[in-house]
Image (tube, rainbow, N blue to C red):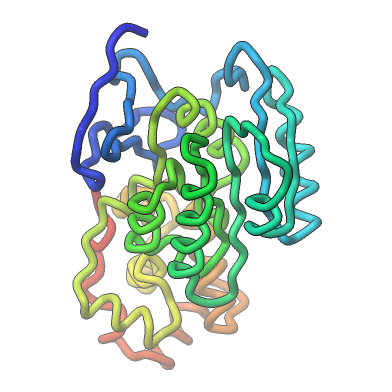
Length: 278
Protein backbone atom coordinates (compact mmCIF):
# COMPACT_ATOMS: atom_id res chain seq x y z
CA UNK A 1 0.00 0.00 0.00
CA UNK A 2 1.24 3.47 -0.79
CA UNK A 3 -0.83 6.26 0.67
CA UNK A 4 -3.20 6.53 3.59
CA UNK A 5 -5.92 9.16 3.76
CA UNK A 6 -7.15 10.85 6.93
CA UNK A 7 -10.48 12.49 7.73
CA UNK A 8 -11.25 14.52 10.82
CA UNK A 9 -15.01 13.91 11.15
CA UNK A 10 -15.72 10.83 13.27
CA UNK A 11 -19.23 10.41 11.83
CA UNK A 12 -18.22 10.68 8.16
CA UNK A 13 -18.72 7.61 6.02
CA UNK A 14 -16.20 7.40 3.21
CA UNK A 15 -17.05 4.26 1.34
CA UNK A 16 -19.95 1.84 0.81
CA UNK A 17 -18.41 -1.55 0.20
CA UNK A 18 -19.81 -3.55 -2.71
CA UNK A 19 -19.18 -7.05 -1.28
CA UNK A 20 -21.18 -10.04 -0.06
CA UNK A 21 -21.29 -8.22 3.28
CA UNK A 22 -23.84 -5.77 1.96
CA UNK A 23 -24.75 -4.44 5.40
CA UNK A 24 -21.22 -3.24 6.20
CA UNK A 25 -19.41 0.04 5.80
CA UNK A 26 -16.05 1.46 6.47
CA UNK A 27 -15.65 4.90 7.97
CA UNK A 28 -12.89 7.01 9.38
CA UNK A 29 -12.39 8.54 12.80
CA UNK A 30 -10.08 11.35 13.84
CA UNK A 31 -6.45 10.34 13.32
CA UNK A 32 -7.45 6.88 12.03
CA UNK A 33 -5.64 6.07 8.80
CA UNK A 34 -7.68 4.15 6.24
CA UNK A 35 -6.44 2.73 2.92
CA UNK A 36 -8.05 4.20 -0.21
CA UNK A 37 -10.93 2.26 -1.74
CA UNK A 38 -8.79 0.97 -4.57
CA UNK A 39 -6.44 -0.69 -2.10
CA UNK A 40 -8.80 -2.22 0.44
CA UNK A 41 -12.11 -4.07 0.39
CA UNK A 42 -14.15 -5.93 2.96
CA UNK A 43 -14.67 -9.36 1.42
CA UNK A 44 -16.13 -12.23 3.42
CA UNK A 45 -15.24 -14.71 0.68
CA UNK A 46 -11.51 -13.95 0.80
CA UNK A 47 -9.08 -16.35 2.53
CA UNK A 48 -9.04 -15.78 6.28
CA UNK A 49 -5.53 -14.33 6.24
CA UNK A 50 -5.01 -11.39 8.59
CA UNK A 51 -1.31 -10.71 8.20
CA UNK A 52 2.13 -12.25 8.05
CA UNK A 53 2.40 -13.02 11.77
CA UNK A 54 -0.09 -14.37 14.36
CA UNK A 55 -2.30 -11.74 15.96
CA UNK A 56 -2.22 -11.42 19.73
CA UNK A 57 -5.92 -11.02 20.59
CA UNK A 58 -7.42 -10.15 23.97
CA UNK A 59 -10.92 -11.67 24.14
CA UNK A 60 -13.33 -10.40 26.80
CA UNK A 61 -16.56 -12.38 27.19
CA UNK A 62 -18.24 -13.22 30.49
CA UNK A 63 -20.23 -16.09 28.97
CA UNK A 64 -18.10 -19.20 28.85
CA UNK A 65 -20.04 -20.83 26.01
CA UNK A 66 -19.71 -17.95 23.55
CA UNK A 67 -16.13 -17.34 24.69
CA UNK A 68 -15.15 -20.93 23.83
CA UNK A 69 -17.07 -20.75 20.54
CA UNK A 70 -15.18 -17.63 19.54
CA UNK A 71 -11.84 -19.15 20.48
CA UNK A 72 -12.60 -22.18 18.29
CA UNK A 73 -13.80 -19.94 15.46
CA UNK A 74 -10.65 -17.83 15.59
CA UNK A 75 -8.65 -20.99 14.90
CA UNK A 76 -9.82 -20.49 11.32
CA UNK A 77 -7.71 -17.35 10.95
CA UNK A 78 -4.32 -17.58 9.28
CA UNK A 79 -1.80 -17.30 10.78
CA UNK A 80 -3.50 -18.87 13.79
CA UNK A 81 -3.83 -16.12 16.42
CA UNK A 82 -2.84 -16.23 20.07
CA UNK A 83 -6.05 -15.78 22.10
CA UNK A 84 -5.90 -14.53 25.70
CA UNK A 85 -9.41 -14.89 27.21
CA UNK A 86 -10.85 -12.81 30.06
CA UNK A 87 -14.25 -12.84 31.74
CA UNK A 88 -14.44 -9.12 32.52
CA UNK A 89 -13.06 -5.84 31.26
CA UNK A 90 -11.27 -5.33 34.58
CA UNK A 91 -9.61 -8.76 34.32
CA UNK A 92 -8.22 -7.77 30.95
CA UNK A 93 -7.03 -4.34 32.11
CA UNK A 94 -5.48 -5.52 35.38
CA UNK A 95 -3.97 -8.71 33.95
CA UNK A 96 -0.33 -9.21 32.99
CA UNK A 97 0.82 -6.55 30.54
CA UNK A 98 0.22 -7.76 27.00
CA UNK A 99 1.01 -6.15 23.68
CA UNK A 100 -2.39 -6.92 22.12
CA UNK A 101 -2.83 -6.43 18.40
CA UNK A 102 -6.60 -6.45 18.88
CA UNK A 103 -9.21 -6.38 21.66
CA UNK A 104 -12.45 -8.29 20.98
CA UNK A 105 -15.10 -7.32 23.53
CA UNK A 106 -18.40 -9.22 23.61
CA UNK A 107 -21.05 -7.23 25.47
CA UNK A 108 -24.06 -9.22 26.67
CA UNK A 109 -27.03 -7.24 27.94
CA UNK A 110 -30.75 -7.89 28.34
CA UNK A 111 -31.51 -4.17 28.56
CA UNK A 112 -30.07 -0.87 27.30
CA UNK A 113 -26.34 -1.26 26.82
CA UNK A 114 -25.04 2.01 25.38
CA UNK A 115 -23.71 3.43 28.67
CA UNK A 116 -22.06 0.14 29.62
CA UNK A 117 -20.41 -0.27 26.22
CA UNK A 118 -19.16 3.33 26.21
CA UNK A 119 -17.72 2.96 29.72
CA UNK A 120 -16.01 -0.31 28.85
CA UNK A 121 -14.61 0.94 25.54
CA UNK A 122 -13.32 4.07 27.29
CA UNK A 123 -11.62 1.90 29.92
CA UNK A 124 -10.02 -0.25 27.22
CA UNK A 125 -8.79 2.78 25.32
CA UNK A 126 -7.30 4.31 28.47
CA UNK A 127 -5.32 1.13 29.19
CA UNK A 128 -4.51 0.02 25.64
CA UNK A 129 -3.56 3.13 23.73
CA UNK A 130 -3.06 1.64 20.29
CA UNK A 131 -4.82 -1.74 20.14
CA UNK A 132 -7.92 -1.64 17.90
CA UNK A 133 -11.16 -2.55 19.71
CA UNK A 134 -14.02 -4.54 18.17
CA UNK A 135 -17.33 -4.58 20.05
CA UNK A 136 -19.68 -7.54 19.61
CA UNK A 137 -23.12 -7.06 21.16
CA UNK A 138 -26.33 -9.06 21.39
CA UNK A 139 -28.21 -6.31 23.25
CA UNK A 140 -31.55 -4.93 22.07
CA UNK A 141 -30.03 -1.53 21.35
CA UNK A 142 -27.01 -2.93 19.52
CA UNK A 143 -28.80 -1.98 16.30
CA UNK A 144 -29.44 1.57 17.52
CA UNK A 145 -27.21 3.96 15.52
CA UNK A 146 -26.65 6.05 18.67
CA UNK A 147 -25.13 3.04 20.45
CA UNK A 148 -22.88 2.28 17.49
CA UNK A 149 -21.77 5.89 17.04
CA UNK A 150 -21.09 6.27 20.77
CA UNK A 151 -18.86 3.19 20.77
CA UNK A 152 -16.90 4.43 17.73
CA UNK A 153 -16.65 7.95 19.08
CA UNK A 154 -15.16 6.70 22.35
CA UNK A 155 -12.44 4.58 20.81
CA UNK A 156 -13.83 1.42 19.17
CA UNK A 157 -12.78 0.62 15.62
CA UNK A 158 -15.51 -1.92 14.99
CA UNK A 159 -19.09 -2.69 16.06
CA UNK A 160 -20.94 -5.91 15.20
CA UNK A 161 -24.56 -6.60 16.31
CA UNK A 162 -24.44 -10.38 16.70
CA UNK A 163 -28.21 -10.84 16.31
CA UNK A 164 -27.89 -10.19 12.58
CA UNK A 165 -24.19 -10.65 11.79
CA UNK A 166 -22.02 -13.74 12.13
CA UNK A 167 -18.47 -15.07 12.11
CA UNK A 168 -17.69 -14.35 8.41
CA UNK A 169 -18.50 -10.66 8.95
CA UNK A 170 -16.39 -10.64 12.12
CA UNK A 171 -13.41 -12.16 10.32
CA UNK A 172 -13.77 -9.68 7.46
CA UNK A 173 -13.95 -6.85 10.01
CA UNK A 174 -10.78 -8.10 11.74
CA UNK A 175 -8.90 -8.11 8.43
CA UNK A 176 -10.18 -4.65 7.64
CA UNK A 177 -9.58 -3.12 11.07
CA UNK A 178 -6.07 -4.51 11.48
CA UNK A 179 -5.29 -2.82 8.15
CA UNK A 180 -6.42 0.53 9.58
CA UNK A 181 -10.14 0.67 8.82
CA UNK A 182 -13.23 1.26 10.95
CA UNK A 183 -16.16 -1.12 10.57
CA UNK A 184 -19.88 -0.67 11.39
CA UNK A 185 -23.28 -1.75 9.93
CA UNK A 186 -24.18 0.32 6.89
CA UNK A 187 -27.97 0.03 6.99
CA UNK A 188 -28.11 1.16 10.61
CA UNK A 189 -25.73 4.12 10.46
CA UNK A 190 -27.27 5.51 7.28
CA UNK A 191 -30.78 5.37 8.73
CA UNK A 192 -32.41 8.55 9.96
CA UNK A 193 -35.22 7.82 12.40
CA UNK A 194 -37.77 10.48 13.30
CA UNK A 195 -38.44 10.83 17.03
CA UNK A 196 -41.95 9.50 16.46
CA UNK A 197 -40.57 6.24 15.13
CA UNK A 198 -38.25 5.86 18.12
CA UNK A 199 -41.16 6.49 20.50
CA UNK A 200 -43.27 3.86 18.73
CA UNK A 201 -40.41 1.40 18.95
CA UNK A 202 -40.02 2.02 22.67
CA UNK A 203 -43.75 1.65 23.33
CA UNK A 204 -44.03 -1.52 21.29
CA UNK A 205 -40.71 -2.96 22.53
CA UNK A 206 -39.67 -3.28 18.90
CA UNK A 207 -36.53 -1.66 17.53
CA UNK A 208 -37.05 0.93 14.76
CA UNK A 209 -35.73 -1.56 12.21
CA UNK A 210 -38.21 -4.19 13.44
CA UNK A 211 -40.99 -1.60 13.11
CA UNK A 212 -39.97 -1.02 9.50
CA UNK A 213 -39.96 -4.76 8.77
CA UNK A 214 -43.32 -5.20 10.53
CA UNK A 215 -44.82 -2.44 8.41
CA UNK A 216 -43.90 -4.36 5.26
CA UNK A 217 -44.92 -7.65 6.86
CA UNK A 218 -48.42 -6.29 7.44
CA UNK A 219 -48.60 -5.53 3.73
CA UNK A 220 -48.06 -9.22 3.02
CA UNK A 221 -44.65 -8.79 1.39
CA UNK A 222 -42.15 -11.63 1.12
CA UNK A 223 -38.78 -11.46 2.89
CA UNK A 224 -36.95 -10.96 -0.42
CA UNK A 225 -39.11 -7.93 -1.27
CA UNK A 226 -38.74 -6.49 2.24
CA UNK A 227 -34.97 -6.90 2.03
CA UNK A 228 -34.85 -5.11 -1.33
CA UNK A 229 -37.06 -2.21 -0.24
CA UNK A 230 -35.29 -1.69 3.11
CA UNK A 231 -31.79 -2.16 1.70
CA UNK A 232 -30.79 -5.08 3.93
CA UNK A 233 -29.96 -8.74 3.37
CA UNK A 234 -32.70 -11.36 3.33
CA UNK A 235 -31.06 -13.16 6.26
CA UNK A 236 -31.27 -9.95 8.32
CA UNK A 237 -34.98 -9.65 7.49
CA UNK A 238 -35.50 -13.23 8.70
CA UNK A 239 -33.82 -12.38 12.01
CA UNK A 240 -36.09 -9.35 12.44
CA UNK A 241 -39.19 -11.40 11.60
CA UNK A 242 -38.25 -14.05 14.19
CA UNK A 243 -37.76 -11.34 16.81
CA UNK A 244 -41.12 -9.77 15.93
CA UNK A 245 -42.80 -13.17 16.26
CA UNK A 246 -41.14 -13.72 19.62
CA UNK A 247 -42.15 -10.30 20.97
CA UNK A 248 -45.74 -10.65 19.80
CA UNK A 249 -46.04 -14.28 20.94
CA UNK A 250 -46.86 -15.36 17.39
CA UNK A 251 -46.08 -18.68 15.75
CA UNK A 252 -46.02 -17.46 12.13
CA UNK A 253 -45.72 -14.29 10.04
CA UNK A 254 -49.46 -13.81 9.54
CA UNK A 255 -50.18 -14.17 13.23
CA UNK A 256 -47.39 -11.70 14.05
CA UNK A 257 -48.88 -9.06 11.74
CA UNK A 258 -52.34 -9.62 13.23
CA UNK A 259 -51.19 -9.55 16.85
CA UNK A 260 -49.10 -6.43 16.27
CA UNK A 261 -52.18 -4.63 14.95
CA UNK A 262 -54.18 -5.71 18.01
CA UNK A 263 -51.41 -4.72 20.41
CA UNK A 264 -50.35 -1.39 18.94
CA UNK A 265 -52.88 -0.50 16.25
CA UNK A 266 -52.24 0.58 12.68
CA UNK A 267 -50.73 3.88 13.79
CA UNK A 268 -47.90 2.10 15.55
CA UNK A 269 -46.05 1.03 12.45
CA UNK A 270 -47.62 2.80 9.45
CA UNK A 271 -45.60 5.33 7.55
CA UNK A 272 -42.34 3.48 8.10
CA UNK A 273 -41.92 2.05 4.63
CA UNK A 274 -38.92 4.24 3.88
CA UNK A 275 -37.34 4.02 7.31
CA UNK A 276 -33.97 2.38 6.92
CA UNK A 277 -33.86 2.55 3.15
CA UNK A 278 -30.50 3.50 1.72
